[in-house]
Amino acid sequence: MNAQRRHARKFPRGRQLDQTALNQVREILGPGPHQRDLLIEYLHAIQDRLGYLPRPHLAALAAEMKLAMAEVYEVASFYAHFDIVEHAELPPPTITIRVCDSLSCMLAGAETLISAVTAAADPDVRVVRAPCIGACDQAPAAALGHHLIGHATPEKLLADHHQHSHATARSRLPDYQASGGYQLLQNCLAGHHTPAAIIATLSQSALRGLGGAGFPTHRKWTMVHDQSGPKALAVNGDEGEPGTFKDRYFLHHDPHRMLEGMLIAAWVVGADDCYLYMRDEYPEIIAQLRIEIAALEAAGLCRHTKLHLRRGAGAYICGEESAMIESIEGKRGLPRHRPPYVAEVGIHGRPTLVNNIETLYWIRNIIEKGPVWFNHQGKPEHPGPRTYSVSGRVKNPGVKIAPAGSSVRELIALCGGMADGHMFKAYLPGGASGGILPAAMGDEPLDFGSLEKHGAFVGSHAVVVLSEHDSLRDAARNLMRFFMAESCGQCTPCRSGTEKALTLMATPNWDEPALNALSTVMREASICGLGQAASNPLQAVLRFFPDER
Image (cartoon, rainbow, N blue to C red; front, top):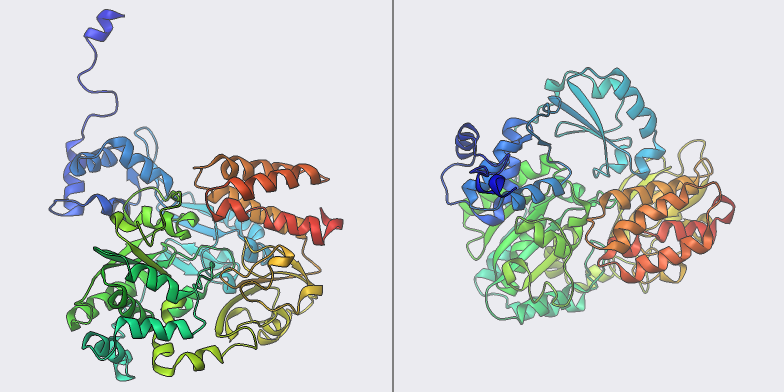
């Protein structure tokens, strides 16, 4: 044994540096020095070029960045969209089809679609299940490579993939400026407004964080504004909640309205850097934003701050603000313990303002038209407009901008009624984590603070409508399967609790005492909202649909 130790290998097994891989990594990344916080961007660049991440290239990347191999590997293996190929493994097929199996797509026949495509696919095509891809109104939805296929069929998915190349994008900046866009920002930069005046205007409005938490926007801005030292702003564009697709809508139709709101926010709070964190499932949006950011820089409209576009990699947990910040820093998306809060210690230790896409979208309108105008868009006691993502058993699913406090029955009417052959049975008022309510509660106002008494909440205002043809038991199991798959694994109550809950929910008769006890532990002991809210759907079935448990 001692002799073996004295004559150990000069390099540990598997750690020898492959010079060809190193040269290729250097060519892909370009000249250094390479920033630690861009690790995920570098991983994307390598996979975009090669189609996967070979183990030798991960070792080469680690050497090039002067990082431990374990640090690079744990980041690459954390995110679902990175394909790591070990030394003896074959690379993945050249074409990947991701079929969404979240609730809205399940209702639209995703299981049948997955089976049919898998059976018919050629050997050079792999079919994988994917969580929500932000196209619930086009269910069943899938992605062929990086191209979204709405209302997917086997024929659409197995067609020649060369048909799905993206059209050449152009800058929309001139069109937005022609309608008065960025004049408000210019007035702010010229001193015609003050940060205090902007915050005062927002305080008179009912604008809240519209990504799910509903925290008053002016309070967030004030907290960061009052901090000293360098600051940052992060735009949370990682909408991964099953049933939610409003960010895609706003960024597709009017991206500069959000960008102007972002730049005004950066000026108000004094942010030196703005980070736009976008989910990887929106490649067409990311491509367009790159063009628009370049146009803004060329026009000198972001001279008061520096813009950074960051691309997620398939991790729902990164929609949680502190996990998103970890990902922006090039790390695994693990939620942070609080305090301190990100408004105090955020990106690279700086006070950080985090806002949702929709929140920033309304900034220009509120300042130009006034808070009274904004508040009057809602119903009595529910001020402001709301953007509802409506999917499921309705005739015309989609994004519906309606008064805050609208009911699901009103939203169903805006969608042209229930789909043919379906009767309203139940609904999710706030996506996967917002619980499930029966049709008897279909007149409840969908707004912050209105549904908590029923064990539900509106969150990001993602409404999924179910009918008499749907099993609430199956719906709850689908949602728990999502939470189990998307748990970051950091805390035991969430990591083990979601798995245990799914096991218990697979039995013919649910063990109500065990599920209740498990739900309590998950809700009270999980670090972040994923684990805290994961049991809401099953609790709703126990409470409102006892015949289906």
